[in-house]
Every structure is written in structure tokens, then in C-alpha cells.
Image 1 (cartoon, rainbow, N blue to C red):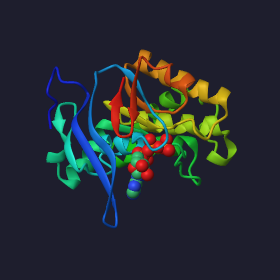
Image 2 (spheres, helix red, strand yellow; image 1 turned 135 degrees about the vertical axis):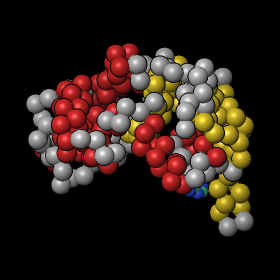
Image 3 (cartoon, rainbow, N blue to C red; image 1 turned 90 degrees about the horizontal axis):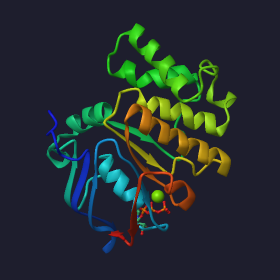
Image 4 (cartoon, rainbow, N blue to C red; image 1 turned 180 degrees about the vertical axis):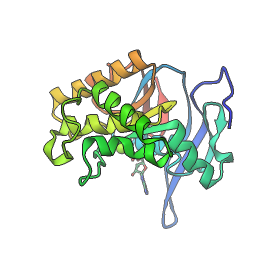
Length: 229
Ligand SMILES: Nc1ncnc2c1ncn2[C@@H]1O[C@H](COP(=O)(O)OP(=O)(O)OP(=O)(O)O)[C@@H](O)[C@H]1O
Ligand SMILES: [Mg+2]
């Protein structure tokens, strides 16, 4: 699975997704064309129901499109088998969701190193990397805390460190600040900005808060399942 050089990290072509409620078709994406280049920090904005989560789920291969193409690092994801999709997700993508999805019985450090253990990395490597990543997100002093011993913003920082653990080509975040107060939200989005600038990570972030979306390099706006503006 080598990447095609020169192609965008993420590209969708005429992407469509309909849900069916019995016989009633609910079109969520109605032909979406987007491109995200390597090293970009892009926010995806739009009103509730405009298709943001649906688009992110197609990009993250958590669900299959009705038609159209999703290419990540030049690879047409529809050509991958289920096993290849799982491998691709583990190797190329980092996910950050609205709910922190941390294992409550594991420490911050253990949550971060878990994906590296799953990838079969050596102990010395994952411990070193885990420490490095928790420092990147400002939690160097909280490594052995359990999620219940961390604030909401700190918990989200752990998920960001965890998402970076496999050195993903693309970080996907769906409303990562929805459960945080406005000051903490700004801190988290600024952390994305630093990770983007310093580590050169490509970030695709859903938000419906204008003030947060504007902190990205570029905004893609969805309305009724189509890109607007
Ligand atoms: N599993 C589903 N079954 C049926 N319809 C769905 C399903 N998921 C989403 N939809 C519909 O698809 C459309 C897009 O939903 P989506 O969740 O992508 O919106 P969104 O932009 O993420 O909204 P929000 O800002 O509220 O999170 C909506 O009209 C929604 O009702
Ligand atoms: Mg959503």
C-alpha cells in the first residue's frame, strides 16, 4: 500500500451517502468534492444535520459511501478489504471524538501506549514515545493519572496524544471540544494548531463554532450535504 506522491492526503470525488429509514431515503451527502493537502489544518463547518459527521465517518472508513470516491494518501479506500481497512486506520489515521473514549481503568500513559502495543512496537519504544507525546500535549506531570483524575480538557489532551501515537498521515477530529468550556476549547484547538505547525500533521476538524473553525488555515463549509462557498 504505497502512497502516490503528489496526491492530496485526502480527496473525495462526488461523494454521496444516503441513509434509509424504511423506504424513505435521507440524503446526507449529495456529491461532495474536497481536497486536503499534506500539512494543512482544515476545519469542516456547517449547521446541524449538514453532513459533517457523515463525511468524517466516510473519510475514517467507519461507514461506506453510497457512491463516489474517498482517496487517502492517493489510495482509493473502496478497494480495501475489511482487514486492510483496519490496518489502514491503525497506520494512517488518528481519531479524536467528542466523547473522550478513554479507558477509565487505564492511566493516561497506558491509554496512549495502547495503539502502539497493538501495532506490536517494542516496550522501550512505546514507553519513550508515550512520554514524549504526553509532554507534547502538556501532560508530562500527569502521566500516571487515571481519566477520572483529569479535567475534561486534560482528558481530551490524552486522546490527542493517543491519536498521534501511530504517527498518522491524517488526524480526524469530530467536535473535539463539544464537551469543553469555551476557554478550554480554545486551548485544545490551539494545541491542534501547534501540532500542525510543529509536527507538520495534517488535521481535518469538525466544529460548528465559528471562533474555533477560524483558527484553522482553511474552512470547508457544508450545507444540506453539499460544499458551499
Ligand atoms: N444513522 C442514520 N440514519 C438515518 N439518518 C441519519 C443517520 N445519521 C445521520 N442521518 C441524517 O443525515 C443527515 C446528516 O447528519 P450528520 O450527523 O452527518 O450531521 P452533522 O452535520 O454532523 O450534524 P451535527 O452538527 O448535529 O453533529 C441528517 O439529516 C441526519 O438526520
Ligand atoms: Mg455531527
